[in-house]
Length: 276
Length: 253
Image 1: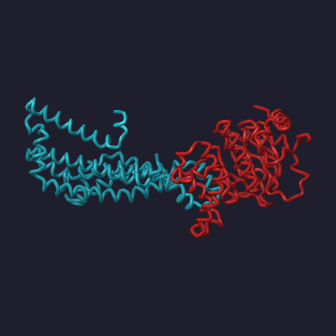
Image 2: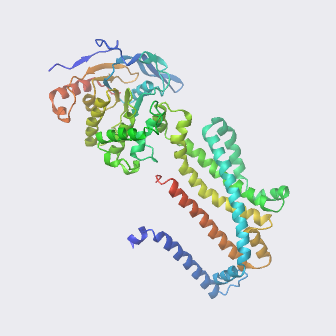
Image 3: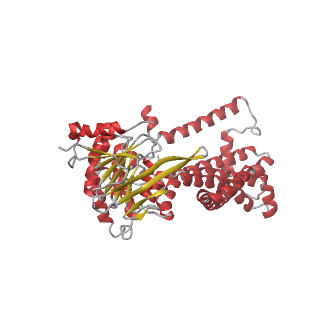
């Protein structure tokens, strides 16, 4: 087994020859605070290849969520730029799926219809939604089966547990076959057992979808379990201080958590997190 | 007992029992203290009067119901439109909201004489008063509903590339529906109050008018009979909306 690579990364990713899907180019973020501009993020430069799963970990308040909002284009980067296939992101991308810590399902729709929502909005699905509805429902049902919610299609959000809602929200994030899956601490509010179960399901969904996964988390085990690369952020003003390549075989299992290798990754990341 | 309280029939039976108990207590008090019907008629004499004057009561109740409903429908139309303007446009919010609040603080009874001068003592002042009282809670609730959509819900849609119209269709409107229904129940009662106030100040028909006429003739039992009809209509109106609400927004809890 190879030793985990822990390298200081300030110059972006090297060694991977393919065209990156996402590039961060000296990205920064400032926020007005008590009359002055306070730097939250500075000089984040990295790139993400198609099919990669990356995590951002770091102390709270280091702007992890802001990174996600910048990538999605919901709040585009104003300092530096993030490029998607070479194009600067300055408005919401259409081919992303997002799952937040709060699963935000629409309470007036049952599970199945919640999952179908993106297909009513995203082209080309939207165009023939009524014609293809049967096929779309089948797609939704397949996803729901993957997360073992097949028997809860007709239930409304308030009839589901927190973990079930989060699983449904993952399905919703993936049904329109996005190129980028953005996860903003999606398992933060779940209990430890449910959370680990969610890791396995997320990995399964991501491997099926073959998309880029970007996870924001403060759970280092979660980051190690799911990621190809873990980016460690420093306290404010934060930047990427470490990039850890996780070289565990896929699909990863919960048993792997007990291996020395897993724990080696965990502790090498843990040592690099500096609290404010 | 626990089980009965939770059953569906309890919510029908118990209010009836309470009303019946109230009437019996009332009847007893009038009987024991020998209160003249001129001051406080016993329920029995109210019911007798109700039967006796049934045609008048029915006719005037119809008029009140009609003016209330027309005013109420107007209030829904104007209230929903205003609510959308305030809820979606910052400009409209800043310009209109203070005016609306100021207008709403004017006691509507004070406007009725003016309406009577403009439109005469007929159904129009009653309809307008019903409208004036009812549109405000609707407008405020629609605006509130639109304003309280969770930002994350909007983010989910925006990240899919949804435009403003789609965000409204998929989230804004359904999210606002419970607020609208909550306001309709209140607004229906308000419209009713408005119509009756107006009828009792300046009108030629309606239950409010009937009450004023009855008291002027010292026919207190008839006035009470009209009051009871008003109460029954109010309850019916409210429960009609409660039923529709349950059907339309079955998902809200």
